[in-house]
Image 1 (cartoon, rainbow, N blue to C red):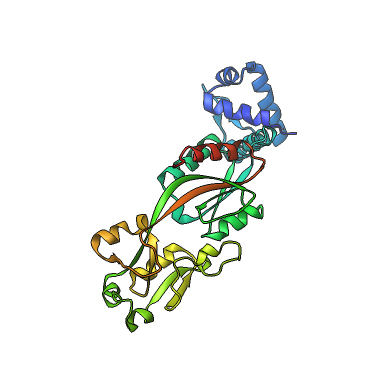
Image 2: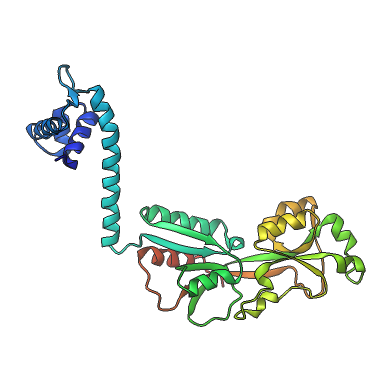
Length: 296
């Protein structure tokens, strides 16, 4: 029966250029390498190598066979590495739930470091706004959360890792028309709101903070959609400053003042885990490295 050692011997001959060189690479005798390959050829029913020349070369059948064999060896090596990961207690996968407005270059560098140190661990990164990441963490669907700090929740541990600023803005033409918030024009305008800011789950009433009661509202699921709508002049609302810097500089979007809507509003970004949560090497590394970004 074909063995992986036989396939590795074939590849060693191809890579090294001769049976003798392959024996040195694999730390086996030349006769052992030749015998292993000869047994494989007998089992297959065709020659893998043409041995008539100065150096062994693959036959046509051998070339076709080796293409498949290389895939098999690669999969076997990956399976062995995965088994080592399990044996060492390294998590096969880690699920992180992130509020997209919290992502910045420093956080992405930490995720990149995790990839480099634990290449066999699959990072599953999901995005959600406001209360959704916390719900996923508390239900056990997420292992770790990066979100804005708007929570007062027991059973969790968090570290403040950065800040971001929200600015209340409108497209420049709309901003002129609604500059006087006492006019009908303003009350006919639409405040664009990320859905969960209004649809509180009862656990976090602060989601309604900054929502004006006596104007129309357009509800969206994320800040990227919100930016598109506001940039089109269809409504107004708060957006992360980092997301709209260029539009602010060009005057395409302008800050507006609306009573009850704090602007600029500084938010703290936090990394969160459950208290007493069992963490393997990957989660521990992420918690430690993200914690090093801590802000006072």
